Image (cartoon, rainbow, N blue to C red; front, side, top):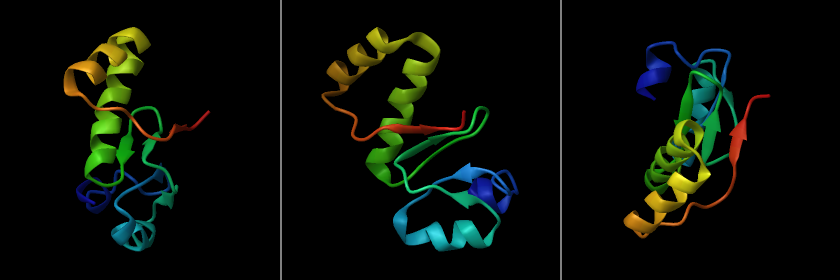
Length: 87
């Protein structure tokens, strides 16, 4: 919501915690019902564990799937769902 208040999500696909999706839409974002939304130079996540999903996604995006799997092992955390990507 801080990114939204600063205008970064206006007109762009984004997500946030389910309790504040209406506020995100009211500030001009195109709300996507997903845990992680990757719109290129803007990546947003939903709730707390979605933030972990987003962090591991960024590791995968920049360093590869094998490294991301190693991070999951170290964290003892498995990502849920898929990443919504603007193609």
